[in-house]
Length: 184
Image 1 (tube, one colour):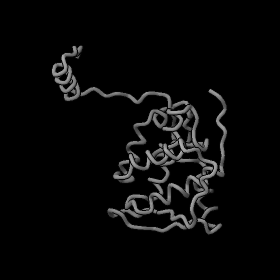
Image 2 (spheres, rainbow, N blue to C red):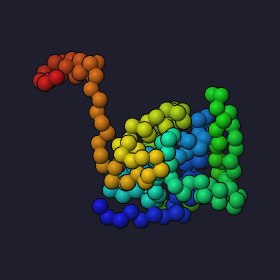
Image 3 (tube, rainbow, N blue to C red):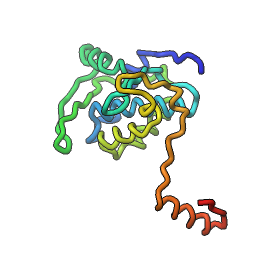
Image 4 (cartoon, rainbow, N blue to C red):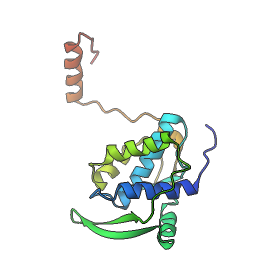
């Protein structure tokens, strides 16, 4: 695998872009922002062999997080490009990043933005807890210990497939219905 180039300016702008798209998402606080960034980067890596910004992600107890996210968030707030607003959602306090200017998307390809938009759509109806739980199923998160860097190569590892009695029964029924054999 070739060296991953990191583009901090793209990460700044991606943070603003995602924050703006999470503005109307009731669960769109810091946790969900973090997970959207992770899923977008790793989904794009799976599709194209390269990430969007090359941000370094680490394993934290609540799921993957970009190492540079907090310094970037603080810089965006200090520059007046964003603000952090505490909100209550389902009895929990969340910290919503509100973009104060449109993201500069000039460095992003249509393909990159397409990946980000698909991830935003896929996660739209999920709470921060659900998105965090989903990130814990990612091979990269399970590959390393807390605080360790999640390698982009982990995006190419297939998630573990769990067989249950119900999934096996359904597979047999579908196979029978369509005349296929099922070795289950």
